[in-house]
Length: 157
Image 1 (cartoon, helix red, strand yellow):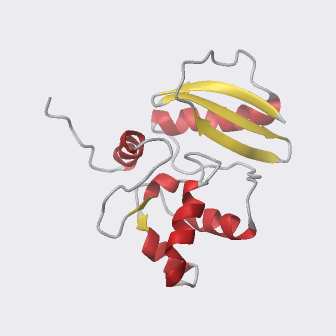
Image 2 (tube, helix red, strand yellow):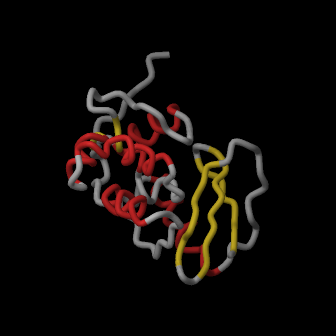
């Protein structure tokens, strides 16, 4: 397994994977030193994340290899289908997966998403429009939703 660290507008990000695919992309809550030489197997991921943050990429084209249960992978595959700039609710996602009663399991799988941004779990919100939990912090979830919004939210202060 190879790793690298890149700097993003939301903090330092660790990318893990190999030639089979990306296994993990995680936001770090510490100051890190960006990797000087990114391994070949991670270069496309690092580049596409930079393009995403620069506003020039709306869809990722990477080989992914997340580790998880079959149910988690099914949820993550459904989350990958949420288009850039749109969101869905945990309830809608559980209905889409065929079991409205699985809403907590869907939310739990969403929270265990190992591939930050690329599997866009930030696009899953509460049925009432609330942000609800987010492993990277609600401030990052809000930033990502604003970043993808056609109407950019301006701060008054």
